Amino acid sequence: MPLYFIQWAELYIAWNKKEEAEECLSKAENLLNIGKIWLFSKKSIKINDLDCISDYIDLAKIYVSVNNFRKAEKILKYTKDAIYKKRHNDLFSKLDIYYSLGDLYAKKQRYKNAKHYFSKALHLQKKINPNSNAVSDLNKWLIEIDGILEIYG
Image (cartoon, rainbow, N blue to C red):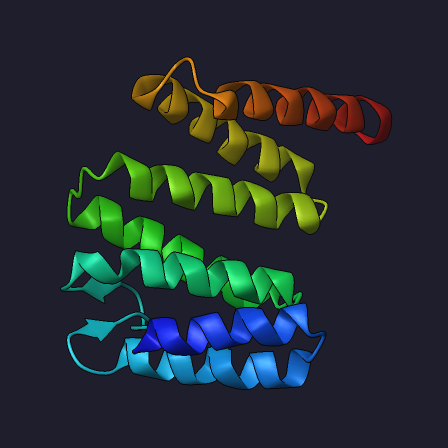
């Protein structure tokens, strides 16, 4: 059910209707917080159903696209923590988190953080499939970020 609202939010973004997208994101977030999953606890995350991790990642990506970076960062960091606390060995979820955090920080112009997460994504991508196009894309992004960091520090 949260995926339904996430997909509608994506459509609203494509139609340039950010208020409607935010409303759908809020509904998706509420659904993700009901039932077995509690994303926003005070100090720790309790995700009992690790199958919903991709829903959280999708939700965060949409928050990035509507420039709600604070909420996206919170969701991604808590989801990353939940994966590690549960010792969840799904490399694709970890890879998706690293890509998403790198993208988030690049859009926030926090290039050192972006470089950190893109480097982690590159390392993991090489483990999964060293010959993929993603490896060369990540290398290009890291070279671009290095260039930005050289110029602006």
